[in-house]
Image (cartoon, rainbow, N blue to C red):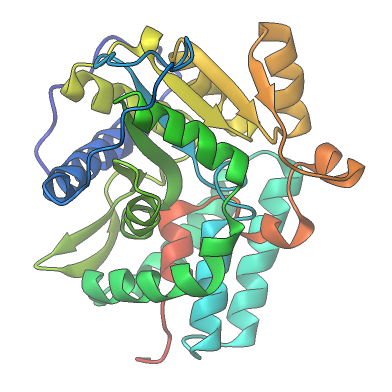
Length: 312
């Protein structure tokens, strides 16, 4: 993929692979949203819009994390359930994946060797499969497992931006193909997600950069904002995870949604807005339902583990 010339000056906390992942995700998101633009109905104009979001501000947009921000639990976990139901892989594969993701979520930090091992094994599985296969299955599984797990409160926040005439993007470590399905079903503009390299519609077994996680999300938002002519100080971002502090810090209107303990503390220190749509003290302390923790991150690696071993 040709290098993109969109980036504005950035802090050097992001790695070169994060920058590449962010740029690739932004390019894929813009392409998919442009293709859908002609068929998307225009939102009805609501009277007496609140001060924020500002109606008609075409320099503003909203960026929403997906897992446990827009959707209860993790998209990849629900996607994996659907594939397991279809006998795409064996129980031991699901258990191994679940353990890796639960460990990450509980530890709250990435072990580079651990993540590299998961990524390499996953990409070896996805290699040779068609992109269209992932997209078709994603449509089916959204209806089966995801549609009734959307947080109504967060959905209303996204709709407020849409009604104000602003674009709304999902920003997630999930594969861009799956993220795009979810965004389209919710009537959003599009999605920034992990980009797995493909040639002629077939996965090569490599990622473009790295999974769209942490600093890479901020790079994707930065690249998309530059390409779309947005003013980040007028944009909003929403997330449940402290891993997304780089993305939240990039915009003028950061929101902590169903925040984990670290993000809640940081949001209070920075005087960021908080919204919590969960019930129960345990949810407030832990940040996600225990079962959902297995799909917290790993983006493209998770997509690959979710794909079938049936062709082996």
